[in-house]
Length: 175
Image 1 (cartoon, rainbow, N blue to C red):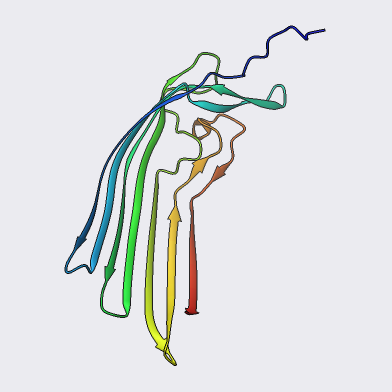
Image 2: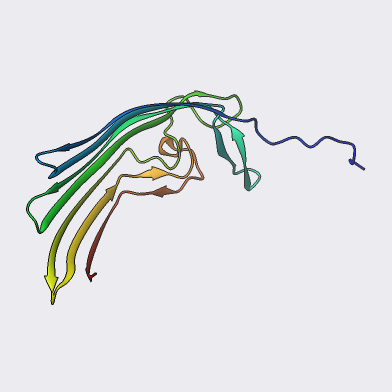
């Protein structure tokens, strides 16, 4: 009846080593803030979704080892008492460094959910209305493409492309 059969997880535990070096700086009489970091993540036995189109389903499995490395930068500059500008961005190289046997991935395949780069920009104007602090703000962000399944950018079926979009927002308020 199967009651004495041990239940085994579908994949093994993964292991991550994360290295990061960063700095948070305030310059120009506290008008400029710069936050930056470089990083490297070594990931062993990475659990990824493996699509099995023949059976119409998929499973989570250890797909091999991966490395994610890149840098991030975020800056904010107070132009004057009323105007603040922010600019930021990130670059990420996230790929399989070794593919496990029996998975449809290859060494060098991009990891799912990892855009290569992203950027953002904002401009905020602060003022008073009848003695109340107020602001107007505009933001823009761009995220490059990424995929829902590893290797999809190398013609493996079943993945969904996402990203490769920009988003603009405008807001205003009275505090």
